[in-house]
Amino acid sequence: MATQVLRKISVLFIVTLSLSLVTACGGQESAPSAGNSQETNTGGGNCAGDGSIEASLGNIAFPSECEVPAFPTAIKDYVLTKTVGAESIRIFEGDRWLPFLTEYRAGNTMSCEPEIWVVRWRSNNPDVKVRMSGTYGGFDAGDPTNLYGEPITNGDFNEETDWVAFYEPEAGEWTTGNAGYIASPSCGQPIMQWDSNPAGNANLSDIYFEYQLWGYKPKI
Image 1 (tube, rainbow, N blue to C red):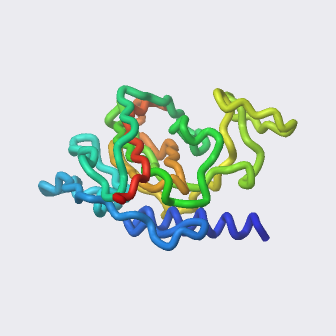
Image 2 (image 1 turned 45 degrees about the vertical axis):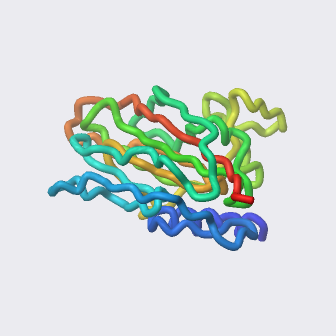
């Protein structure tokens, strides 16, 4: 029963993320709203993007020639606590879904309130399309995995190298493109996966990303 409930939480999170209407997880009455809206490059053609963002939260992906929305400069009731740039992860054709924000190696909170993360990303190979989604990760989602993606079944979890399990998104619960922006509260985390390479010129690509973390600090 607990697994079914968590799966429903995960699906709800992913769907609301893609709709940019991020709702509560684990007893939180409502997710915080952001203090500024993001404008995307919709200068015609494909730059309208796959997905949407509203008040800085959501998930949207673009073709390689399009501009990715900028980081938010303010989020209501939150303060910027960390900005990290020049990160990368290598993905391969046929890979499983991959988590990549190391702050969430040990899982996500059941409350959406404590933190908001924001990620901007781009494929180094402009022909490689990437799937991007958000999901819940935790020890209650299955066996954690080590650095090589192998299941850990002996209870020996290393927070420096290992990752908790997470619920994989189902069809339609992700965006697809060569670059993008994804942001959500800390009841979930971003994950990515190889989608396709229409040019057929590679079976791997480095995905460059940068991210922000915003901590909850209501005005008193």
